[in-house]
Image (cartoon, rainbow, N blue to C red; front, side, top):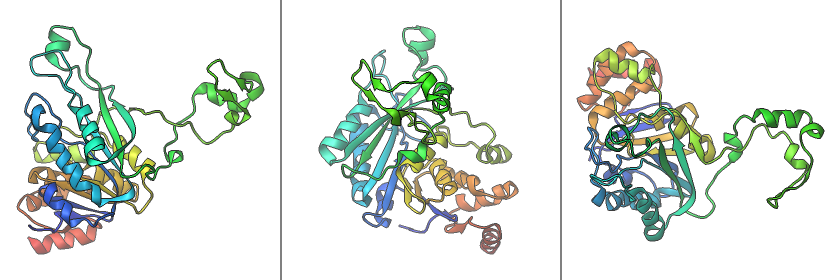
Length: 328
C-alpha cells in the first residue's frame, strides 16, 4: 500500500485509503484525540456509503479495536452518531447505544461522558413519521460518545468556557444584591466562591451548534468547479470544541472517516498536528479546498489529487505551487 499522504499542510497529513490499513502507519500511543463521524446506520443508502443496521455495530467496533493501541494513555476517542428508526416502523433503533456498550464492555474503553449535539437548523426527518403522518417530532440531536483509554484522560474545561448568562453577569457585578451564600433546598452548599469571575461558565454536555455552512472556501471551490461536495459534513464547531477541551497545542488529532476533512481544518487552525483518513478519492481531492490560499488553483489541485498525486504540499503558497508545477 502507498503510505504517502495525498497532501500535507503546516500541521497535518491527509491520506486516501482504507482506515483499517492506514492505522498501521501510526505509532502506538501517538494519538491524543481521535474524533470522527462515521457513516451512520441509516435505512436509506447514501452516496458516501453506510452499513445496514444489523451489521453496523460489529463493523464500527473493528475500527475502535484497531484504534485503541494507537491512543495515548490519556487520549480520547470522540464518536458522533446520529439516531435512526427501525425499517418501516416509528420505533427507534438502538444501534448507537449498542455501539457504546460494545466499545466499553467488550473492547475496554471507558465512557468519560456522553454529549448531545443539538443542530437547530436540521430539517424535519424522517419524512414518513414527522411530515406525513405527523406522529413524531423532528430528529435534531446526535449522540456524541466521549470514550477514553484510561479512567483519567487529558481534559481542561477552562479551555471551553462559555459566556456567562446576563443574570450571572449581574451577580458578579453586585453579589450582595443578587446572591446570598447558603445551603439550597437541593442540599447544595453555595458558598462565596460561587461569585468569583472565572472568565466564563462551564458548558453543559448539550452542544448547540447549527450546521449552516453556506459560503465557506470549501463550498465556493465546489461551486466554482461544478462538483458535488461531501453531503454529510459536520460543523467545524463540533471538532473545535473537543480539540480545545481534550488536547494541547502540538498534540496529534486523528479523523479516520474524514470526509471533507473538517476535523483537519479545525486542528490546523488551533495549532494541533492532525492526520486524516478517507477512502473516497473524490472527497480527499475536494477536502484540499479547505487549505488552498488561492481558490483559482482549485481545479488544478483537485485534478492532480484525483489522478493519484501524492504528498502534495499545501503548507505555504510558494511551496505547493512550485511542487505542483513540477508534477504537471
